[in-house]
Image (tube, rainbow, N blue to C red):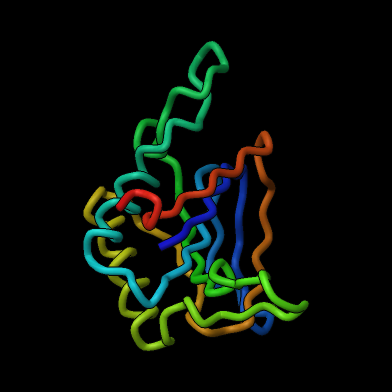
Length: 149
């Protein structure tokens, strides 16, 4: 499982001109699911994301987590995080989970976040979305559960 977590001051998601939701400061998370991912990947990634100490404390040091600041979180399914560009010029997505499996794990990831007391804003699975946000810092963190195991 791969995540790109971005500290943002605002975020909104729309599909076909319909705004699915918007939030103020917090995290925008792009979530990629591989065909090898399992429950342990979900547990690791959800806990890691909500506890990332990337928000400034009173001295401006990145020392607070999303839970500490009570920020919002937006999660967008992003199979392109598994794009392999080692050959040619067109990415291969062979390592990404098939849509049915990816959506099930994406939904479970959202459930795990709710278990931390969060109310995640979500995109629409397999839809062409417009994600608008302001990256704060900019702070962008890459996480990969495969590097853990």
